[in-house]
Length: 564
Image (cartoon, rainbow, N blue to C red; front, side, top):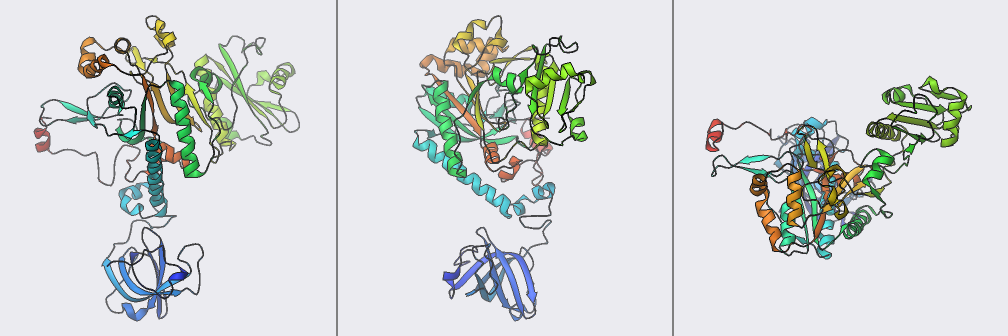
């Protein structure tokens, strides 16, 4: 028997019990004839006390040694009420070393001295620390709650293949050579997209899967090349059905996991989001929508000819005139005006420093001392994009993004297509199985860029948490979309022949959504890197520096796979 109890459960009511514990040595202290050890396991920490005579001879006890002890629970004279076991200690009668340990490359403490690289090389040691261990527990609890909630609401969890054909879904696929089919390759699934649609055709009413997905993209703090997605699909639904149910789903998770009651999710169309915030994933915690100013500046010489003039106001930034910040946001097509406490003004554009022009802006924005105005002008897309970036910099600089406030919203009516300048053809904004709005289909031949799709994204605090759409369920429309994406009849048949064929057997209307599990946990916990919630993540270069992958294959293995 390695233990009768774990290291986190003994308390005052257990005083007098004879116990066996096993754990890693967290801390050791010698006080003359007495020795103290803290041992740690998955559940917590317990203090041990014993006579130095017990370890006389060759018995050396170092940090992270794994030991088994026998002893009696006694009341602790110097109590520690910060931990559950802080009122007791174990008077040890026997110690056995189960395994020794080398000195660790970083301290196994909540506040460690190890940088990210060294902790990723020794990730198994990093998992011993409470921050990582607790993050994995949070992930487990969230996944369990997702499964329970969706199951209770009629969703069936079904696994779909990971080894599939390469399909044009927007990102590069990882490919896997086949040993038995010479010259042929599998692709790792970017998502279960086609299979979940085939399940709807197969008569499954509601499907979900916590699915592993793979995309050969550049990694970053909120994106890994392999990631986990909460993948869902429903039959006989339209846009509002999906949005209503999954708003309920997200509200439930926030309430259950964080005890946060979310307000109703506003719905903003893609054109309005771009018009008001310059992005399709706006953070609305701090307001500051763009104000269009073309009519206001039609008599100002250097602005009246601009395609678009827009501005935002930052209120009550008293005594803030940070040159580093203002230098950081410097842009030739953006200028700022600041109203000082004495009601005088500063501006990055001296042409504005005459009373007539200043009065125009002051009245329109209702400027008061401490306010900042930022004005952007130029081509529509450039002006909005530039001011959108400034808006986020302002929010960061003035601490306007409260991490304890969550503001979800739906973005709807995204474009069906966007122009790919590199390949001189259209590509899908979401994926080629997204349904266009029926009233826009007539635009397909002459104005495909103007077609709106039945798609939707869930944005929380400026982060895309989920994305989905109503799918095409008509064979003719699906073929038409493929052709407008530049696929030949031969390519359609080779890549999607099985899928198009399935449309001939009574395909129901259906739609769904996928949420990024890693991003959702990261957001819920107010963290800034999804790696902290993945047991064995890749670094920002897509490498696992613990197991040293990717790696080269030996010539014999390449030959076996018919590769050179």
